[in-house]
Length: 518
Image (cartoon, rainbow, N blue to C red):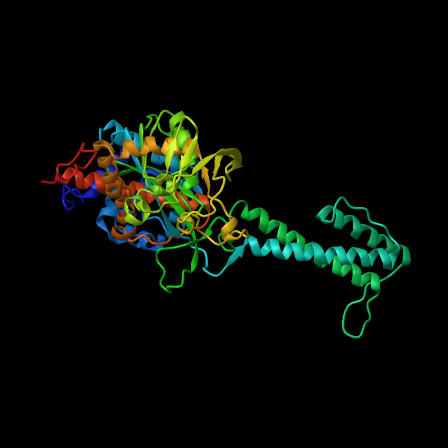
């Protein structure tokens, strides 16, 4: 085998790289390991090399171990593992320590000088779950059904009070499981006292108490079901019955062209020098609330601290700006209105705050017509994460007779007639200040270079995984297994990238240069 495999084959690099890893967490997930069986290190090599060659099925990996000389080289004379052993390796063993293994790989690349440890490019993509497509549970629909059920229960309780002369005292109008169980207990007491025997089958008439108890049991089961579904949703709007960890999201791969939602996960990549140094799998369809958990998780596992955080417009928020500042990191996040602000329509919109004159000493805005919008009051708002944001409200005293009123005040959602409406601005001073500082950073020469590299490196990592490695759908279910499979893909991507850099003499390069215009 040593003679048959070329010296520059990626399998040799993979073998040498993995041999340098400690993999103590992976070994701890096993009990006793027989000398005749494949070791966890060899299993790890096989799974990584399979991903490097677009092989994701356990049965296909088993076949490759029996026929492919490169897989035999990694097995070192051991018998080929069967597909069940390979599946157990990922779902039972590697899933317990996947992120710690990725951290170990990242640390080795850092020690080799392959990653900078200074700037990280963050982006996200949605990858479809292994769940069935039409197994959705919508939180809004379940909540609506639960509300209707509570109304039915209220009517049922009133009927029981009349039929059996009982009096039920409740705190409020909502009936919980504990309250219904108490009612059930009282109904069963009446049954025992009167010696009523339940009957079943055709031609047998049920007593009123039997009908009441059966109705109550049915309501109890339904209420348990709805409560369980709402609890499982958490702060999500949906989940899949066959993979409860997956959330229904709008995907770019829309083969039916009808905006169909599919069960998926939001995969976040942190890329440095073209290597995936960290990742996170979330259940949220949007990226805004994923940045802070991503950075906290990364800092807990990596020994070095990134200085420059580069991300797209989807990550911009006041909370994210303040977190990065408190964490001693520089935000290079494209503002939400960055591309839009370059257009003529945006610049000519007189109703926008950005196109009005602000007088800092008097804390007021001057509109296009020269009228004043002084500060009126501040209002506090709490975001979904619990962050408190202060918004300042500026309002014009009188907009009657203004020739630019229809251009300045837009929207027909207000019940107030147009002639009585006045211009009102809602401004977060903190967000305005942080966005201004961020805009200054990203428009500098260094910031422009980082943004260019983000589009090449962060989005390029997803292009490699989805197109080059042909991975479009997870083959495992559950958050732990999906994370483990994502880490396998990331490490495979990193080994492939390291091999290509060695072959092209590009090792140690961290950023692409900007193209100089004449």
